[in-house]
Image (cartoon, rainbow, N blue to C red; front, side, top):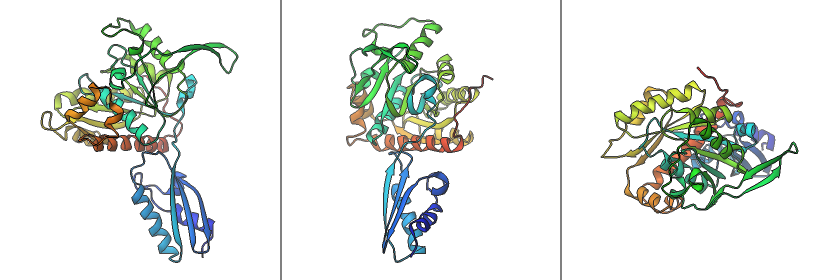
Length: 354
C-alpha cells in the first residue's frame, strides 16, 4: 500500500491535458491522503474556467489504478488563479491583465471583450472590465451599467493623500469607462496627453480590489493606447479579434506585429462573426501560418446583437442560446493560454520599443 508521499510522486507524473506538462512540474498538486484502501488527491487547477476536468480526473484515476489497484481514489478539483501580478507597478492587486484588441474597427472587439469578462465571471472568477476605447465607449450600454463612479480621498501606503474612484458594479463585474463621465451622444475630443491621463486614472486611481482577471477593451487600430498600457502595466497577454475575411485579416496581422514590438505576449486569435456572411476558418488559417494560438470562433448569431443591445451580456453566458457554447470555449482557451504564458515566462514581459 503506497504512502501519501508515494501517491503524490505517482500522481506528479500525470500529464496535464492542455499543456502536456506533468502535474508535478506545474505545481498543481495541493495534497494527497491515504488511509487503508481510501485515497484522496487534491488538485489545484490554475483557473475555474479549466476545460479538461474529466480528462484530467480520468488520467489520475488510471495512473493510480495501474500502480495500486487496491486503492479507491477520490479526486478533488479546486482552483486558484495564478498570474504575474504585474499590475503591482501601479498599485493594482490583479493577477492577470488581458488586452483585447484588433487591427481595425467593426470586428466586434468590444463585444468579445464584454463576452470574455462575462464568461470568466460565469465560471466563478473575479473580473474587472476596463473600457479603454475613450472615443467610442460601448461597454456601459452592453452591460446595462449607469451612474458616475464615486471618488474619495484616501491615504496610500506612503502616507500620501490620493483620490480613488469606485468602479461601477454590473452583476459582480467591476467596470470603468469614459461612458460613465459623459452624457449620451457627447463626443470626446482629446489629444494624446489627455487620453493618456484618463487611462492612467482608470488603471491606478480606480479601486479595482482583488481580481483574477482585468479585461481591457482597447480602441481599434495600432495607436498609442496599447503602448501606454504596455508602459504602465505588464500584460498577461493580448487577444486579437478578427472576422474571417481576408480584408480584416490584413489589419489583424498588423495588430500582432504591434504587440510583438512592445513585447506583449499574444494569447491568440478569436474569429468573430463566423458564418455564411463573412465565411469561416480564415482566422484559424492565419493563426496556424503565424504559429500563434487559435482561441476559437464566435458565430454570427442575432442573439448576440439582441443581448448586447438590451444590456444583457451577462445573460448571454448563462441562458441557453446559439452563441453561448462557442463563447464559453473561447473564455476557457483564453484562461488556459494565460496560464501557459505564465509557465513559459513567470516574470512577465519587459517593454521594448523597437
